[in-house]
Length: 195
Image (cartoon, rainbow, N blue to C red; front, side):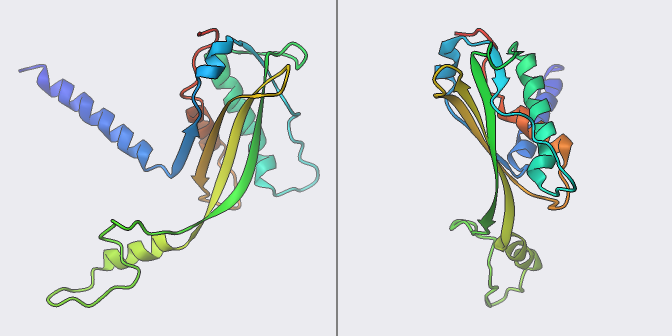
């Protein structure tokens, strides 16, 4: 009986972390890694050179590029993959970044979200429902990145992951958040040399 409380506390903590991750505003959609793992590749290079910021560019892609590359390099290094020159690489890493907009859509089964409060007998208008309708009903700016692994010999796609996140500050790139999301996006990737 003494050991039950620490186990329950640990389980509650794990559940709390999972719920926070689920509500983070980030959607990560990885492809199946079996084809990539079957190659047994361990050496990689970036397909393109790092973006250079000429002048006073305010483009978020130019601002985020160093954080994206650093996070990917760090995570791949932790998994045992080696960054080498393009001529020695077995696979190439590249990404495509694009901004987008998500039209605030309401789920059909969301009962506490009403865009137009209706009159009901013996019921006051719930301000929380009205606030939710305003907050969830508008257009949200999204940041989208597709990270792609390509076979160096024939440029076929070996694996890819798509990441979409709500942009919280359109004027600044949060490099820590970008790094964290990119590390999470590589979460399903197997260690180097695993077949």
